[in-house]
Image (tube, rainbow, N blue to C red; front, side):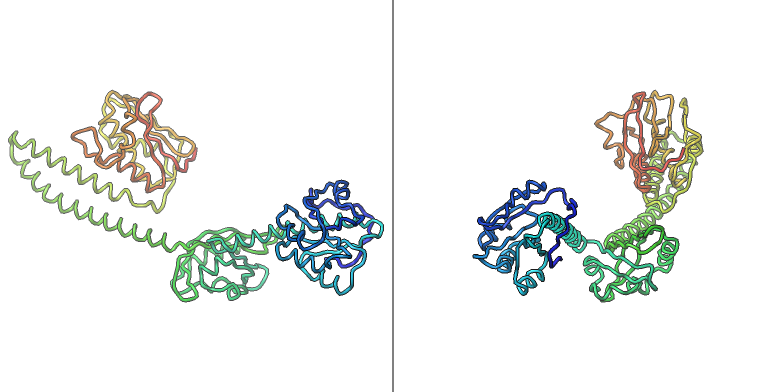
Length: 471
């Protein structure tokens, strides 16, 4: 803050486009604040005497700065400032001829205050400059305060580490970090963030973070950390480098407690394993007696056993499809580059198809689990062969974020498309109703979406999106 007169005759710099002034000026004073504001592109949003009642009203205005001209016959400048501070933190610029030294010192010791001597030549230019500077500073302080509150009240932990200092200590942590870890801000600042690690922290994850920092790159990991009270939690950590020109100076860290998400993922994984085990046991325990029964029927040459053979065949199909549905729905852990043309041709050869032709691109590559993609296409091709009566061609085409399998058959009525992927849904009395459910399960396991649409030829089109496609 400035504590003495400034008689600079330079032109004031417009650091703020418009300054909204609240003026506390005696009615008898020669200073015409409205004329002053009009000449300089400022606004006077309030004008009144420098007394307690007017000071109370200022807080209700849209002012960005206050100019105070004390009344020799009224309260002192310091008394008016005290009244203002009961309701407002706006900057106050004292514009006066002379002020007692002790009073001026106390005035300027208060936050957001300044002083301009009133009568030296050019004092109004100085006053304009000070008002604009004070308004700009107040805006910056308000923005900084809002940002600080937002950061501290955020649900995520935010940290800044100094990479220019040995051991890369944290120089900032927000309150969200303190709440998540149990470490108060003053206990975390000055330490390397490894203090959150413990016996179950994966060394490979730590190595991934260290390699990213050494290579001045970003990284995102789930890491096992420990709170101050020793309880473990899963921390989803994103780190990003900060550069000054080309020099790495700091690292931002963003932490989210994902313990509950990890718990649910682990439970889902265990459930999938149990389901897979159950399906395998079911397949084994049912297929053995089915094989025995089928062997007995094969030895009997009697037309009466045809119905029994058909029932056994249907049971075998159900077992196969239930087992596939259980296994294909497991989350895909890894994908590879797969030629859509190669797997399409292979899947076509695995299905009994009469009178149909396949049109599939040879130059399209997708990221997928190859065996499960084959299963998707087999089920879709089989669906055409069994349900799309009158179809002549099945076409596989690539789109920007996926692929489409379409036919030129009668299509699927719009009212039935939402239920097409339901387990057990079929229009064929001899079908199991699991084929399209398996397709949907595999798409979901890849984190793709699949929907039924109408093809260009009026048939059915199965559109897959969210797929990494290379052409």
